[in-house]
Every structure is written in structure tokens, then in C-alpha cells.
Image 1 (cartoon, rainbow over the protein chains, first blue to last red):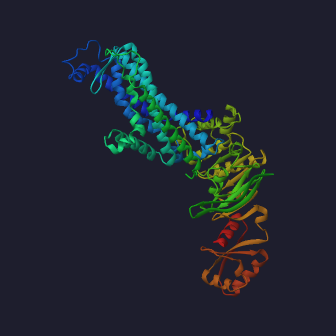
Image 2: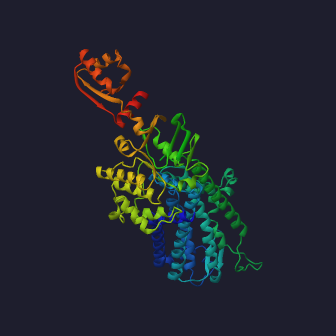
Image 3: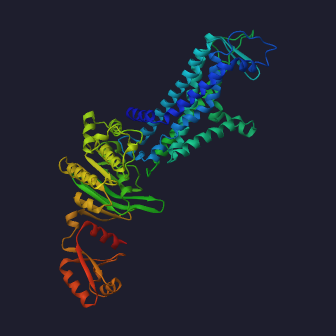
Length: 291
Length: 302
């Protein structure tokens, strides 16, 4: 298995396509950071226009922590599409290239190949997420400095002391890794079905868009299935930034408002990962390698 | 000792019987030629030997182990190329060998990678990316990957595809060297029958998924029976005359030209008979090659 993982990782990181995602993330983040650096105060004023009459906020509101939060809100919706570029190509790309028969005639079982490829794709996903974290969090902290994190939710505001922020980002990125691994496993499942590269990539993206729409629709019929859709849970990294308050309405440092929601989301996402990868293994094992 | 033992395997794709009740054996040290027209079931059989395709029925044993239950152990001792040499365009020849070396339990040293590059004549292009390679170079690299781990059984599906005459000769010499000097067992399929004739000690002819013949080439190519190709002034008339005679059983039904499979001592009698029957004979060519034997069998089967 170790041989397969190192074999696959070598191929992933020698392939030019792999770096499209890294480049796209860097370009997006740098452009947004540049925009906020140049005209950030206007943006902050626009965000706070509704509460300026009732609340006075001092300090560096537009700090690295807030910039990272804004970036994650924007990017974690789109990064799955970049993950799909690689994950959905892992098996079908080989079938398309004709190399699948070369791999499957080596002394490893198909289950080992599928799992090895999935682990390699997962490592790529995690590396991509680390790259995102470096640029979105650490570069923002360096460029914009740090201060307390001031967030405006739909009908309330959250203020988190700067000493209480960093671990929440660690939690958010770990959670995001589960979300993205779910996308990786979905891409994998699609990849095991097709014999060309484009179909599974488009299929994965379409499935994410389709289920995201279902997750956000407020129609009673769909409300029944919403809790079981992975797309309902993918954005729950934000729960790390909702804080409990005491009876005196004071923020409790180190607390999370709804830990159960995070746990439930992690269970649902993990279940999807197991189901998607398990099905991909089953399909690949049964498949005749004709291409 | 039987290296490959195939027992009554069949593979059906829906209603299509790609391979139908095929049995054969390959002994250690043989160069076994696998012959058949396109769509005859050669590649399907080879894929079943490598467990890329699951047989609908029947069993395959390689080195005495079932490919179904001891797949990994069996595949450790096989090197194979299947049809086209499909490789990773963004990797170099050397990277391919280094990568595939990782997938073998045998220790493959950097010097054996260099040796393999020399063996397949790619030492000067070792660092070039595969997307710059010709089909022949890709084919040689594919063979290099198959030979890298020094397997006991080598399965080569159309190994001379895309090679120039020198490349074909090099591969032929390599196959003969591997069989004679290194004692490898080789199963080689090709549509170039003369190639098989020069390389193989045994052949199997497959047609529409069924075995037509197998055995040592010397036995199959009966020296007493010749294939005769007639060129006449009027083929229609010649066929009618032959069909009405005692030579009719020797006639091979062919769309282009008149072929007969006939004992060599009857050839003068055939000549005499045709001239007496008023058939204008331009040329009588008698041969006894694998190609003729192949054509004879497959045309009879058709």
C-alpha cells in the first residue's frame, strides 16, 4: 500500500494540472488581499453601516483573522471544484490514458489500488488546504496584523478575543478537510464509473451544485432529506466561530456554541466518505478492464 | 512443467462470446505464439490471464496457482504489455522504470534500471518525457517495464506494433535471447504471422473465440501438405473445373485468388488436370508457411 501511495503521489505532483489549483487559490487570495489592503476601510464601513448607530468598535477590525474568515467564506465553496479536478481523474484518467491495465496487472489487488489512490488524492487535498491556510490565515495575519475577531452574523454580532481565535481556525481547517475529503471521495466514486476524465469531473461538480441547491432550498419536502446531504454540512466550519455567552451576556472564552452540530456534521461527512469510497472499491473490483 | 494452464475458459459480453471454451497449456521455456485475426479473442484471453477481465466460466492456473485466488503471487512473476504501450506523457523513460520498480517486491537497483534502458535501447532518451517519444519508443519502454523485475513469464500482446524493421528485429532478437539464454517463458501475440513463425516454438490459433489449432510449429506445418496458389486466365472457370473434380476437397474458399491445400505429390497431377481441362495456367506457386496454414484454417472455419 505504501508503494502505491508513493507511486500515486509522485504522479500527482509531477503533473502540470495539479498546480492549477495551487495557482488559482494563490491568485484569488492575493487579489482579495490586495483589494482589502487598498480599500479595506470602505469595505469595513460598508459591512458595519447597519450597526454604526448602536455600536462603536475600536481597534483593527479589518485584521488578519477577519480577512481569513472572509476568504474562507468565499473560497471553501469553490475549492471543492479544484479538488474534483484531481480526485475525479484518479481512476478514469488512467482508464482514458490506457495505463489502468498496466497498474492492475501489478501484484496488488484492486482494493489496494483504489484505497492507495484515494489516500494519495486525500493527501493532495490536505496539502491544498494547508496551502490555503498559509495564504489565507498566516499571510493575512502578516499583512493585516491581528486583533480581536469581530463577526457579523445574520441577527447578532460575535466578538472573539484574539487569544481565542487561532485554535478555532485550526478546528475550522480540520473540519474543512473532512468537507473536502467528502468531495474527494465523491470524485473518486464518479471516477470509478467512467472511462474518461471529463465526465467524472463535470459529474462531481454537478453533484455538488445540485445537492448544494437542495440543501439551501426551504421546501418542506426537501427538509426531510437535508440533514443527510453532505452539502448541508460542508460549511459548518463556521460553527467554530459561534461562541457561548454567560448569563451576563458575556462571551465565554474557549467555548463553542453548538458542539453537537459540529459532531453531527463530522459523522455525516465521514459516513459519506466511507460510502463513496466503499462503492468505488466495489465497482472497480467488478469492472472488466477493457480500455 | 506447465507455466500456464487454461481450462475451458469463456468470456461473454452480453450475447457476444468473445472467448468460447478455450483450453491450452504453455510449458516452461516455450515461446508460445498466440495467433488470431482482429476480434478473435486474443486480447480478451490475455486480459483474463492477467486478471484484468473476469472469465464468465473456466479456470486459469499460472505456475500452478489459480489466478483468481492467488492473483498477487502469480502477477509478481509476470511481466506484460497489453496492446498499445500507454504510458504517462509527463514522465520520462527513467521515471517510468523507477516508479514501476516501486511496485515490485523484488529489489530493483538503479543499475538494473540502467541495464533495462540499455536492453530496450532507450539509454540515450532516458531523461526525455514520453510525450516526445515515437510509438516504437513507447513500445520499447513498455517492454522495459515488463522486463524490469526479471519475471519468469513474459506476456507480450503485439510487441512489434509501431516498430520500424530494425526495431522489430531487435525485439525478435530480445525475445529469442530471453527464451534461450535466460530460460523465460514467453507468450507473444501478433498479427504479423511471419514474426511469430520466426520467434515461436509453439502456436495457438484462435478464431472467433475458439481454438482452431495448437501445438509445435513443426508438427502443425505438415511438410507433406503444401498450400498452392493458382493464377489462371479465368479463375471462375478454374474453380468450376476443380469443384467438379477429385481435387475439390483441397480447395480453400478464398475471395482473392485460388488456394488449395494439397499433398505435394499431387501438385503435378493438378497441373496436368487443369491444362487438360482447358484452364490457362499463368502461375502455380506452392508454399508451406505459417501464414498459409493460418489462412487455410481460418478460411475453412469461415
